[in-house]
Image 1 (cartoon, rainbow, N blue to C red):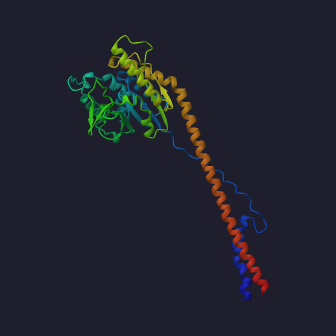
Image 2 (image 1 turned 30 degrees about the vertical axis):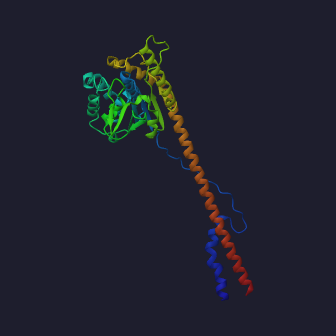
Image 3 (image 1 turned 60 degrees about the vertical axis):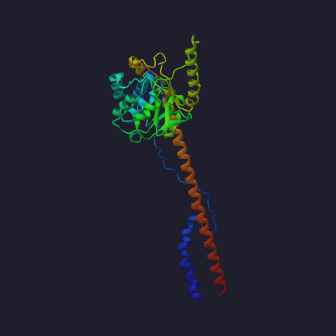
Length: 346
């Protein structure tokens, strides 16, 4: 019995040595020090582009995308309203800006214009649907190379509807169905018209696709500062002003807003496509320093936040390790005191 008691301290020696790392019996543990954090890797920003409506002015979108690509900025998600949905569908399908420009210059208006005077619109829109589907190789929205959101307005209740699945050409047709010009489009029992009625520049749709940074391209008509001289002019001006006010709210949620100077281009002035593309290029290049600076600033903020979180975790891990060590030391102290008491009692 006495021999066994004498051997116990020897058996406890490894534990004593292990606990020496905590500071020993008579040394108070030092406060935990966080281990230096290895530099963290942060995924690149997801850049989204929101392409607004504007009929023939929409060729400006091609120029904007061309300059973004030329400067190493590749939008990875795309949203489009009306004319913006046409360009957005082509871009999301995998075309680059030069391929889209080639398509634009080869466009024959007869390919997209099917007149129907007695069905609620001047143009049916079926040709536009078929043409878009042909250009995107019949890909559905969910099969695009870049995530694509096409915005339309549900006529029954005015709800903003974002199409991300289904027939691409049909969604683009719905998004482009300007009331009074195109027939409204029936999809799954609901009726849809131009997305510009509720979302002239679909910034929110790009955010919903996961964009961290949204570049909005606004080509919508603006009030020209002159009072119209006719009843029809008053109506058109009032609609334009309402669209401006509605669009301003959503544009405020973009990181960058580009407004190519295309207001002089008419809605059906397809002959001005080259001018529109050039104006898109100019608008993008003028804003390029700001775009690059904001992207760098946002990425740096993300890196700093990731490093802060990693540092907090490292500190917490170090504190937990120290607390565990101290707990083990307290247990060892109790065992050693009990051994000493038993030995003195013999």
